Length: 516
Image 1 (tube, helix red, strand yellow):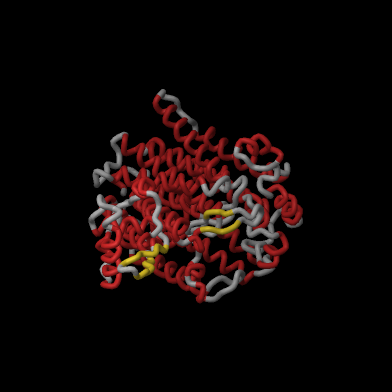
Image 2 (cartoon, rainbow, N blue to C red; image 1 turned 90 degrees about the horizontal axis):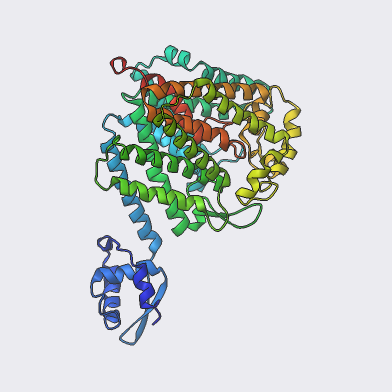
């Protein structure tokens, strides 16, 4: 009978909830295992110890009992799924106690955020049908149901639509221009269906704004998404690799994707999770946001370590863009706190200029063929083409310049034909994707929306410094992230959706308490 060496085995032991194993057949097999191993492992005499050992090893071991050989198959993936589900459920129960002012209606934008930050439902349920251009009927039906419930909730709460639209004028103008651009799209029906998703994103932001405490609602969405998506990403990568791993198109090496569609999507998710958890832990250490459970900080540190683990990836297959954006966000976070400590004030114009410079730099990088990022390439261990990005930009930029002013209509460029022609699913630059879809006019409108959000974030510094810092850092990280990744071309990207929620809810979050 073969087992790993005893010293290696002891190092691998993880206590497992053996009470979950209740089937009589499993209990009988474990009884035979205990009986056969008692002579070799005298110190491990409990039922729980034998179950734990086989659960960790996760192999088919021949067990000899009464000179008869039987094979006992312990499936660690099943038990890992049960453990992960129980762990996530426990975290959600903690989160519910931490957000007492949040209504049940907040699960509507939470479900929407979970869908946009992970794989579509059609990926988990392949029998739902659909095609790449028209989408999956299952996803479409689910999003329509969420949109209808959101509209019903806003109507029931007597939401003040005119005021909300007036306070977010540039957002509404951007959404309206996206709608008008469908007129010159080559696929107007598909473009309109893609536009409805942008409308759904704004509806979800309005639902968050209509909550009694929008700030607590946004934090709750953060925690729920992180508590669910990060542990399940680890689960899929470790125990269900058919869902959690793929092989890269360019290098053919293994990549971790977790609950997302691609490596960079997982990197973006970890970027959001890591920064929010660090921000939360720092605030808690300063006396704000006290824990409701004495070990809550330990659990959040564990999830933070999971985020770093996922961001690291297998070997050198990590998302350099997400890591760079996180480092820049943390440096901005540290800089703003140091300025506050030494009594230095950052003007609104300076902050908006920083964001504008990053946007201009991202656009200039496209026309420079990535040469402006030469200093960056060597520091993150990438080749001169930024893993093929400069070749993609060189191929797509002439196409974008054919309709440089108005673009090809919102959602009108990326089709199955263009994806097959260029062998990519996006431009690997948010600014390039905006240029392809709604042209330079769209880039101007997106930039104005981000700058108006930046101005609101600056105002928030005087009302709630921690909250304003969180907002500013996410704005800068989003601007940096879109230089070599695409998330700004749609409001349904998790990174931009966070900025959308913060922008729409700012009026109520930073209002005097007497007016809330």
